[in-house]
View (cartoon, rainbow, N blue to C red):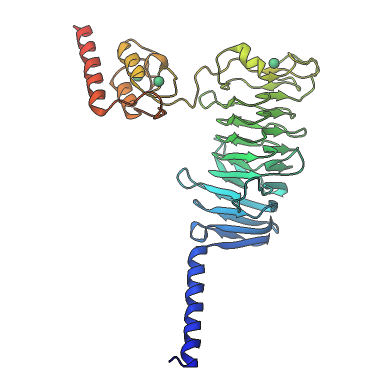
Length: 394
Ligand SMILES: [Ca+2]
Ligand SMILES: [Ca+2]
Ligand SMILES: [Ca+2]
């Protein structure tokens, strides 16, 4: 028979076990919220950080967030950089994720807002980031705001550096920049948002390169600010295509100036539009040609090869398979373009290109589509191709 003391000990042990168990289930959850007024570090050891109430950086504090951190926001909460900076630098393998803390569908948090007293990003003479607010290798998703002129990332009178990041599932814009000067957007993807990017009036000199503004429901890039450069580096073009409304919507008024630098015009040269057909590109751009009250969009020259193409996919079918191998072998020693097998753009088709193709064999090929040959078949194909080349060389 148990004594009273045994039962109370038992109860204590159960309680301890329960606490341990719940602690384990909840993992290393770190609850956060409210004002951040001193320098603060969030690291992978404390992830996930669960945000219960709005976060606001004040008092010139710096919030540093490390690779692999998940920040999970309660519905309707937001993250505001009011006075100070956020340095959120993930890595390709360990991005930082800003997401909703809910499994319910159609549940959103309100996104990241940069305000006037954000410490702007600064750069060296070669354009490398030095200091200031930065979002790099981050994911921002499942956000909503009541105002249509807002974004998953909203930038007001400030210029953080947004790089290498993915913004998706916003019910407004992926990014909204109002009165942002010298803003730089590098290698970001804005996709599956209500709209992609809105550069509002009073912003200027927004420089973009290597961004992917694709498959948003409405507008891709909505330009209402002057001095926008859509694709600064021809070797790292911005891609804009597959958006539901216009890929590029020029909201600037025509200022009776037909030159590239005209204040109502947009420099959208050297971008990739998902097609090489100028008529198709023009169809997806809204400008002076559609409405003479709007400025012009300069989109020529445009990039003619998809910068997101799969290495080895010579015929741009989206899959690296024997069709590509046949093309490459057929053009051995004579091909000079991607489409003829010169995958490394060295000016000739040789074993470097063959190595690249074989290294990417099967990439992009759907299991339901064309069967990926077994390694044995692949060897036969290559041997056959090499025999063909040898015969040609004799
Ligand atoms: Ca048009
Ligand atoms: Ca192919
Ligand atoms: Ca080559």
